[in-house]
Length: 299
Image (cartoon, rainbow, N blue to C red; front, side):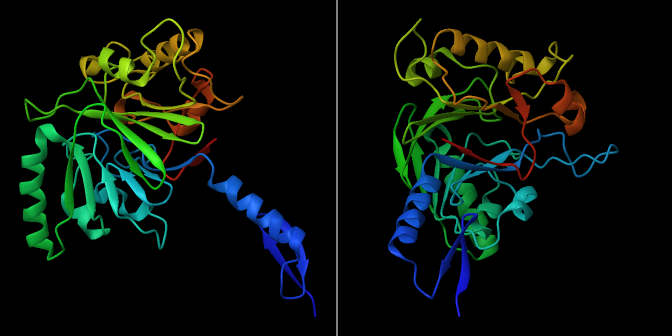
């Protein structure tokens, strides 16, 4: 009796084995699915979120899962957003604020390798050692990063760039990241007040024209519409900041996304943004508010 096997939405009738055409189609679809960079937003909120608010909205602390295997930032607030059965071994940290950095949570999900700025490597080593003792979980390898250093994990090149942000450690250099795979160049920029001059130079868009263009942007917008004038201006971005950044990069040819692809904003302050429905209605194109659980494949 024939059975019907569904492969990525395509029905293929077989009698136990895939015929050559079906095998070819399956392999082609698999290769297509693996192209680009897959992002799952585990959390999209700033530090002022603490559970569901009086509007019924919920945003966990900002972090993302890359290709189902690599974390950028992570806290216990987002453990429930991890897909069942995912295998996590690597985490990249942007900085040491506790809405981004949680050694015990990283150990509980099985992280074995930790990348972070060399400017607070000793502090992180001590805190991870303490977390390992308290949880009785193995100590991961900690890898210090320098600005502009290239690290390849799971076929993706991660490049740390300097953020405009400050932590409790005066000498800590906070980071944003450039992710590159295939033809995708994704800028993940949180927490930061705009893009620093050094970051723009290392990413290749500090000149009027030329260089490799970004194809995707995820950028923080702690301050929402109507809240551009805020004390957080010196270490965070607003929707207006993101819009100006996108317009400038587009005009100079340094941002060339696929047609219709949004710029996603994250790290949204609870008190400075409307509901997700209001953001979906009011945000100017091409900006779209990410939400917890949103999955995007950038091609």
